[in-house]
Length: 220
Image (tube, rainbow, N blue to C red):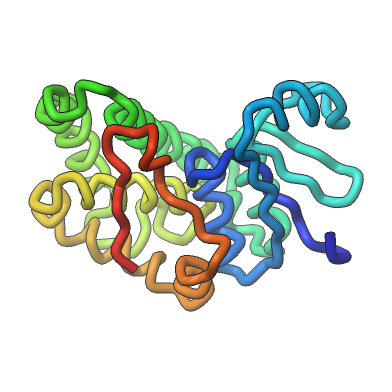
């Protein structure tokens, strides 16, 4: 590992580590991917020796420091950018950021479960009506005429736009019904650093096409 370069460790698909990588790429913070392709490499090797009281994936390593859990990873990544406002300008905003993360997480978890579901085609419309439609409608209200739901860029925006982006690949019409969400998504994903990351060799697939029912093909 190069000096001062973070390590972001996860499986060989985007998953829970992806918003953290997007945030770091946005601010051009150097990081190195540690990709686990074989389950035994994690469960029978590194998980048993990693210097963390809570070994799990994803994890972020910064020198001797190792933090696990996706929520902690992305908040630490936000700290590393030096942009303090990413964590909230005040205590109330920090709570509102957590709320945005929770709503976004609900959406991306629902989409992930659908993608891995062998009954993908059968369940697709149910997930759309019961999860995606109401959550996207609420997010559109939260954004309103602002550039960002909180009013300025925060770490939770990278979770949120990832969820919106994945939903837009499943149901383009559903997301395009909310033009402010499209602008919000593009405002972040069109960033120079993110675009460079998306075009790089280390950019991973959304899901594993050999195992998921829907691979989530991404247009870059």
